[in-house]
Length: 216
Image 1 (tube, rainbow, N blue to C red):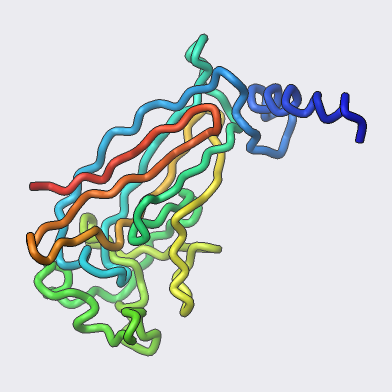
Image 2 (cartoon, helix red, strand yellow):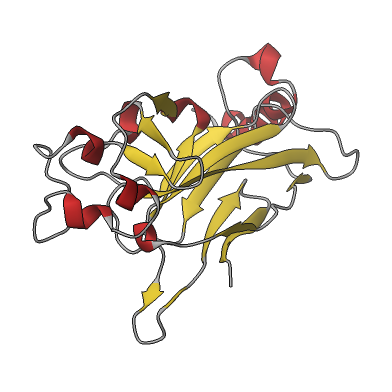
């Protein structure tokens, strides 16, 4: 390919980020002058469910908007990267989340007095035994008290895949909605206290940091 053709690629990506419906495909790298909206901090009340990475935690969703910094116009088709800065917090697109009608967990697990790992058989690494009771195999949200299934590449598997990075794109409103599953939180046994965690959202030319704070 000639050098002149290579030089035109950034201009093509910039045009498609502004007119993605006409270009098709995408999402595309953000053009210069694109900015991200700030993300409000989340606050959660930790329970014993947040002590280990066992599929019992809190499901949250976040929104971020990509826009032209000069005109404030939202931009469609902009590529977004989301990365968790904690191994026990997973990031997923909206399409990966599915509410399921699964058997209810025992009351002692739902109210946080007993950790799921105490009732679900686990191995030395804390991975769920897939021959255990059915409720042990779903993701449980302590806030809504509902079971969720992570579909596609984000489903729980025997290899215990934990997605802490993803790429996605903005919709026709310039909006990107993503989900955060806080399976565990950093815990200091000496202080008997949990710590908050952060995640990173980037479009290359701009980035913001989101926070998951712990209620006092």
